[in-house]
Length: 467
Image (cartoon, rainbow, N blue to C red; front, top):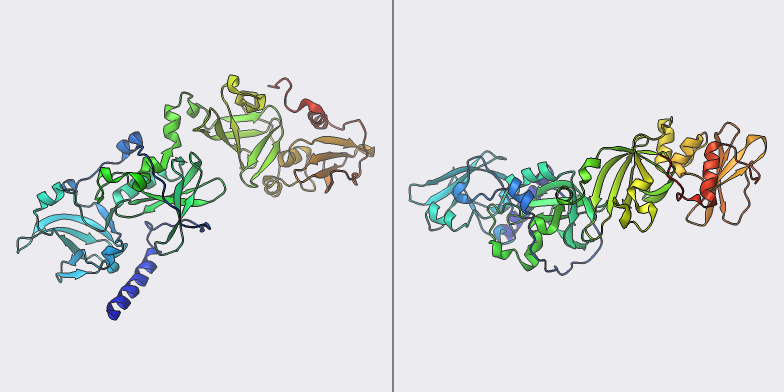
């Protein structure tokens, strides 16, 4: 018994080393802290359009030569033997074959009258077979029994092609993160329902739920779900996908944002890829800094995505700054009559067409992406990094200072020389006096400064739109 256990452990270690080189074995990056949670009951909802258009159930009776599967034994399969080596007619441990890819070769009757299903192992090139216990092949496949341990890779390959890089909604609250690099350990985690996440990668899960979909939220957190899609070679019947198992149907864990865009009454797709610019100063969420950033008027963006909310009439607008390449987000409405405030209405804040072109260096762009103002910045670069100032202080000899109110009760001071170039930046407490080269006056040194002053005196984006 001890020898058997030792051999099993050694074989498992060898298979985990192999798994590191197998592209079908994917893991979430990082592990979230938490405890194992009770699985919530989920009502069955099926994404009929996406599934029916791309995935087809393949009964064992209809399997075609060349179909690929992976050996994914569960705990019980670790102590039994599913396959036999055709050269030696000796049974082979599932531990040895774990994560090996099997290519279907058809079925035949052997010399003793037993039916067997043949496979060629893609990894060691050997022929293995699964012997049907006591029935004919036709009777066996008619009962939809399938071949134990095998996860259908056809679903995985199609899901990779159709889903990687796509935005999807979370349809349940319970997902998983990996706790081991090579093993099968996982931790259940709670996430928000109807949250937009991006599919990072797709790999193999289990026999019954063969498609492992790893997604990432806007904060960079990764989690996954193993889902059944076509149910090819699945050991569960349709009636088994209830209660805890219901969330393992694709449509109960994920919903393609594209599907929502297609059926939504508003044709969001007509806006994708369009160039727009801000008509007024506004605030956008910077994906790089994870903070709200002040954005000046005439800043140019390309529309990357418009993800409609599930619970209200708003959508999340994803924008790419055409100068910096940075991504920003804002929740908006397309219907002006639904907006409680003008700043929520897309057509009020944004206009189609190019914005103001800004000349800048790569070094400056790196600082601007992080929201930092650097020495030597122009007014345009400063506004690109920090937005329009809350107030302007003019000094002698053409010197002036832009002042920004920070969220931590600090004030950021940016000193400019007479040519409109930043010479110094510093912060002070909100009640401290400025220490730069400018003194407070009522004059403003440039058109941009005058525009900023109007903003600071209560205009705040509520005036007449500038087209």
